[in-house]
Length: 211
Image 1 (cartoon, helix red, strand yellow):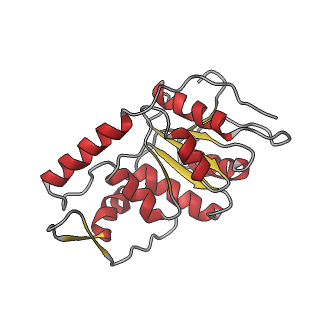
Image 2 (cartoon, rainbow, N blue to C red):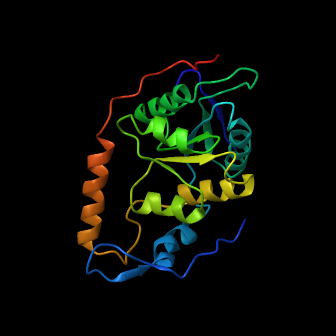
């Protein structure tokens, strides 16, 4: 994206022992088995990351950008870049989606106050699978199960330290990266991913809209 800014440059994760049934009549799969690949790959996946936020989310964007850059990632910041004027969050979402569509980076982080508006506004575009997350577990599962390519978080919902841990978990996880899941379920996940990512219209290289 032409106007994006680029920068480049632990904590223990507690996993629940709860289990989840994936489909009727299928065995229960411990959540720890889903998150195990992330635990093994933590800190190893160095890549470009797109990040965006309106004014509500700007502080968290600043913290996350520095945290990820310090760990070797290249940050592509699509805005906003100032906080003295109200910014329409859908314009930021489209800029993030456009950068994903153009191949600027494989993954993105879109922020706002709650994470809800960030997810709703960006999921209208094709090529984007975004999920609003509030825990490390959901950040991992949305990658492993859904192949989400955009993590959405709320500045008023998650702490800065939790947001950094969630971002690291999201980046470290990978679609279908679980040997304990059957081929049938993996194929179902792929079909669901292909169906959902094709929906919507292509994002455009939109200017940041301010009031």
